[in-house]
Image (cartoon, rainbow, N blue to C red; front, side, top):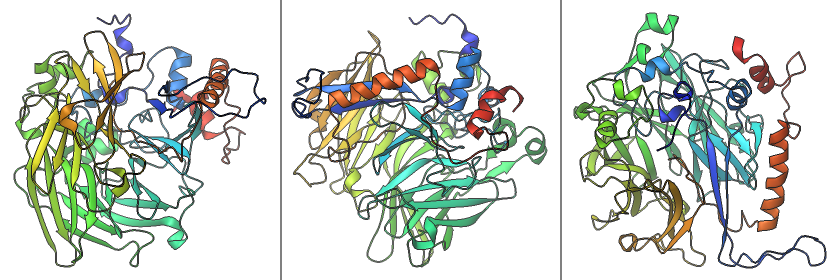
Length: 534
């Protein structure tokens, strides 16, 4: 058992944990650095991998590390509130404090998603700016305003980025949240990570009420968002802005917003429809993929959370570490999950939804090469108890054309994370690549990277790679092809050693920012130096 010397330093929900990134580079052959130029020996990496794991050095992480104690407690009253969806595992509906801007209540942990595009690596969190990381060493360069496209350093950005594989573009979003009305900001960048020329790569759309939106999907012409209807306690919103006291989900239809992308013909135009209500608000959806059919119908698949059947009758299990040491604890804190298909026709005002599977599913993905296009296969992590609530343990694959499913489960003490699709060079079929996932062994507290053939998940891993450490359960990752990430072991090693020296010294000299305050300090520095007062 892991011994914690000071339990008061532990957060009350795993989502409050500081972000860290695991990167694994698969080497296809011996390194080929310039002969005679390097004094270092050339390492034969044929059939080997280089792994690295590093915390994201956010301002909050650095501040707490210097002070040696937990400083950001703004979400603790919310975590002590009994709410199956609000404090759901693994991804809660209440993800950040409602006090806007840079402040001590809203801790940007940068822990939700790692995305690599345009040879840039970012880590994301719902409620603040992304952090830019060094792709080789995983060292932290600092917060990024995406080349100045995001105008406010205190902007509330979403933790989702969607890559349009067909156009080779990436889209982000942010929400300016207010009790009476909110504003959606949608950003679109080209392959060089520059804002597209159309509409300067940005559209802004007003949304009704307090919009708590964490996920979205894209098609050729649209971005798709789902907004649950919230009841807002206006007195608490004025006084505390603590989510657990301020907002609650209403038992009624959620809204689906179809927003024309910045590069589309009717950029910024929005059509809003109500999703048919079946007794469960379509809140906290995990989008998998979306696409357009020839008649204009938009189809998207998502994992839905249902908190109405939660076994939790109190919040006691939310207030101490470990959060879910038994199956009963996990079930008391976790909503049931299911896979759904939604069909929307914006012009006809038509919307429908159908349940594909009631299995307990997490982290659904498709082949990233067809993101935004029609897909046949969906991969997900799956619990081992069918429709009953259970932690993500195995890997499953759905064939939506034949309505079939195949799954693989590890040993009872092993648990898989998110599946990630990796393309196989020379094979353009939808399931001709590989599925990657981290696997945690609870028996000996170690982690492996496991590799499946995407067209034969049920047969189990074809490779199992010991990582060498116990990697905590994570959220969302990505796969980068060799063309974009063809780094040698020597390149990674040199960069990592340099980063280690910088972090040991607490140095930030390599961070390049164009934003300065009147005191001559970056805003990043202000939070670090004056964090106790913010």
